[in-house]
Image 1 (spheres, rainbow, N blue to C red):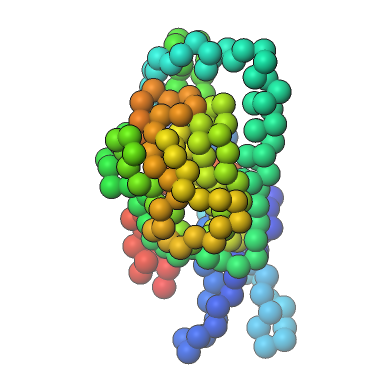
Image 2: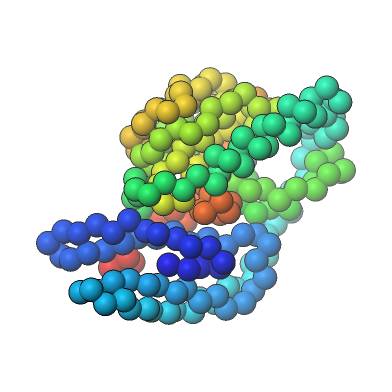
Length: 239
Ligand SMILES: [Zn+2]
């Protein structure tokens, strides 16, 4: 399957109803409104078939948010630059993980029960200086709240990073990866196989955080997407 310059190979599952595959396809925050065609190649009874479907990418107006944080999170000390760069590379490698077997199901499991705070895609200004897009979804989670895996998968990265604080990255298969950051405590290790809903850590305010909460990011083929629809998507839409 080709989508927006990427090749996606969904897991094909066969049961008494036939063979079916489920794929999540994302667009980045930088995508301009346009038509993108999905090309699907499949072998049916020994013959190659190709299907196409055009998706209209529509504009969306994201809100703005102003935040105040410790100055060292705006301009990190010189001694931390190397560390930050190494952490970014580790995170990028984890985010770009593509494993063959799909371990996720729709809908995903909410990681905490707290209400949603900052939504995905916000234009953020820190201390009136730096501007960043908010590439994740923030949930209210008082200090020490258990954080649960949104889907089954394998823990591919655990760290204590300058900006992310204590963090856990999980590969859910077929190019879907999630990260949970700012934890007070991590309850998982790299290489762990986790079930959907399993505790992976406790919420906190480590790294660049203004207070205890959970920041959840979901990546689709290495692109950060809005996690919110994945918890509410009605399953019937897939059939
Ligand atoms: Zn956040």
